Length: 217
Image 1: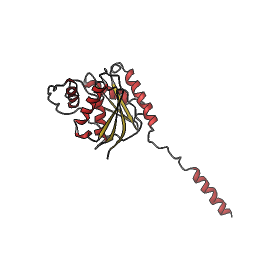
Image 2: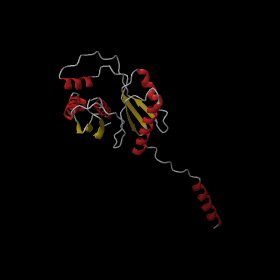
Image 3: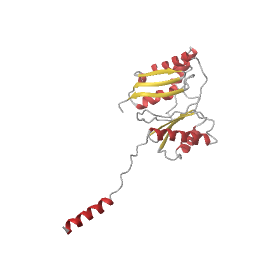
Image 4: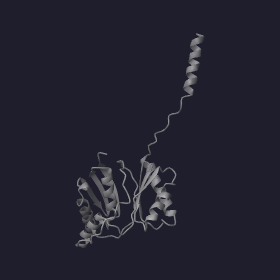
């Protein structure tokens, strides 16, 4: 009887020393939204970045930041400011310097002007490699209002951009007062993100949202 009692005491003591179960490290959509707002506030507070029009996506603690900047040095400044935001695990900066050769924007300009754009030699190598992103239902976009064309012009230009690249053949666009929602199937999440980024350059498009998109990766 005494031995059984001692065994129960030892078992109880060992159970008391078991480590607590850690919570799941996966970030919730709500936390991604809050991080996106914090990144936007940090960029706005920086003297060299406050006048820039940037887009911000946060997925599972990783920020993807895009938009036009005046020179290449500001791209490094954007990342340096973003990675200091508490709770952010990484920042991918896809900003570009205006004036480069963008074939997607050339197609849009041709559609709106009715004449071909002058050909510009492509750069030796792209400055940004877009990392694949995971599919999700909630995300944050911070975009500025662009000069308004007629809705028909904006929709026609956006559709021309999508139809001009075979990567986007199985993706669809839905329009509502300047807002474009992208849905459908893509060969990769990187292809879907490329279409989202280029649609933001279309005059008359005020916001781009990601709908239900499937991809094998």
